[in-house]
Length: 580
Image 1 (cartoon, rainbow, N blue to C red):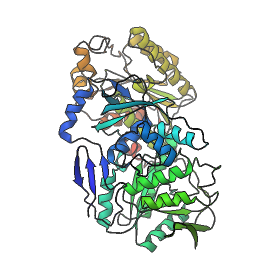
Image 2 (cartoon, rainbow, N blue to C red; image 1 turned 90 degrees about the vertical axis):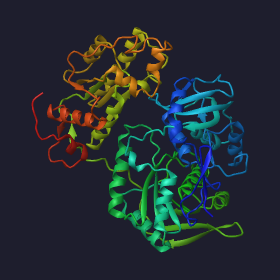
Image 3 (cartoon, rainbow, N blue to C red; image 1 turned 180 degrees about the vertical axis):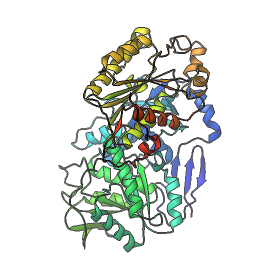
Image 4 (cartoon, one colour; image 1 turned 120 degrees about the horizontal axis):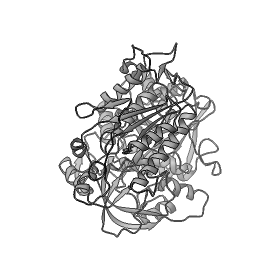
């Protein structure tokens, strides 16, 4: 019998054959609305009260929308949260190890039945929620449960209140780092089904430099005539996280060398490691089952943030009986790969008792951090470099800055991104849009950027920064020759056409005041280092133009005797060097 997929208000059939492990609860609960409703909901979201959610909550929303967190169909409410904390079960009785919650933020007094728009840190609309309850996050007293609550609430928040309600998702939060490597459970299940193997073995931590781990996994798959699913946990929410980015790059490059497409798949998933031990194991097992895996390998040499006090995980002692009972209920076999030369496989017999079965293992020494890449670009001056993107709202500043960020990190540079919308949620929280507040916001961004530059860092700043005098003041904060002003020159008509946030429409209707480009002036730079005209060019083309400028003008130099085959350096076409 084929498994149903629950999608929006309808059900669509699972195309994968029954040999794959069925999703937890019997079907993938998918929250994306049909394409024909997307524009309607985007227009509605522009008129609704908004909640700007953190990067962690955006990642959880993406997992909910894709069905990876099935059987959850929303951020949990109070009763569900209390039930999960006490018994690891929903009120329906279904196993659920983690209560995924959404902090209420500034909407603490919203009424039940209200519709609100959920937006990411860049204010892009993602979903419409019909609020059913606002509740106080439970307080618990045990040593493990507070960690569970803190992680489930949101790694970026200490908000005491949370929201719950039905969701209509119309935009999946974008993954800037290697976007082609983040696939939905339905896509992975379909690809696994084509291999025609049973079972599927999932692993979510992998050191691509550890040949012993790789060979052990390959042999395990061969012995069982199974497919391998590298569903790698990638929980870093910052797009400029350098080490994390290069870990993903290294895994992608090594995977194609070690495995063929007929035996294994590589995928990245938003999974947090900041959970109490057994809850983390079961949560990951549940997610992997939703992707089609019936076996989950836990590599104890690579598990972070474990609970040493419980001695129930990461090789400190034998995992508990309850863990295996819950795993059996999930329909997932757990294999613990130990740090010693003997790998112990635990299984549960029909009577419910766990017994270790020893087998020879080629298991490795403890995991090492992914090696940093050899840099191929460097900053030639004694200072760092600030790239300041300015232009009208929705001109494309953030998109181009993010694309350039990835190119620079590919080339071995550690880069910080200061996005204007994100900065207003932290550094400039509480500031409005008067001339004085705008100037204060820009000066704060400039101060932080100048400190980064003084310590030889590279920083990308994307902010409207409408007033010429204030931008010039920021330039003066920087060491000479370390500031590059980039004017993203997009006509206001084009900005208005692109505006997914609905701000231009509100400004024209008189619902927003002091909006740049409508009733507040924008003063274009008189002598910017770079002008980008985006109306007829793509984001990638503009980012490549900047790479060529930075290398040709020697703001960035190739490092001698380094590999020149890095994609970003090749794409920039940096053969000609001229003086600045």
